[in-house]
Length: 247
Image (cartoon, rainbow, N blue to C red; front, side, top):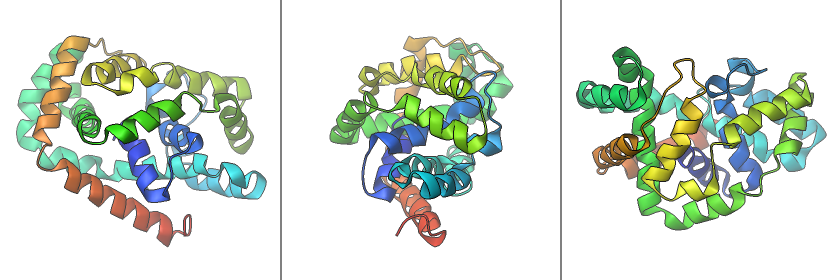
């Protein structure tokens, strides 16, 4: 999932769309997308459970931040389906990888591995734009109101980090995710250009070509996207309920 898919799943699982849930669903991508981050992968990408306990003890009205993280991560959340989507569309890997490598200026091997998965998920976001316009509009409206500073201070206190460095990490990620770019494949390609520039491979995105790839990935998902999203929501919801994180 990506910038639309993650908050969409979190909203369906938790039962509401809030500013805290949105920024919480984005926070795990500080690793790997923010260079020189103060966080380790296990802290920020998979640290939702620890953060939820901290918030329940100190600031329970902000627990949606941690619930968003949990709905994203690989232990409880949507990222556990990444291997599934790769395998489901494995026949398309070689053809798409060549296009991705050319459009992103990364190696063919990188394009075949992590970028193949990334761009399939961007195709899912395009499907959500096409099929869930009311949600996308609400997401864009609330994204513009997220409490970046407050979120940074809570994360810093929980994980023992410098608040200014945490704020820098969040702002680096947030700076690429402009609300106005959530409405089209081209807007999403623009977001991806900003986010992926922070990866070790320093992707150099051709927005026009990447827009086409996103739309083609969306077409690949045409028959499967709704069932896959429902499967993800059901699994993530069950995981969080079983763990006692939600009623």
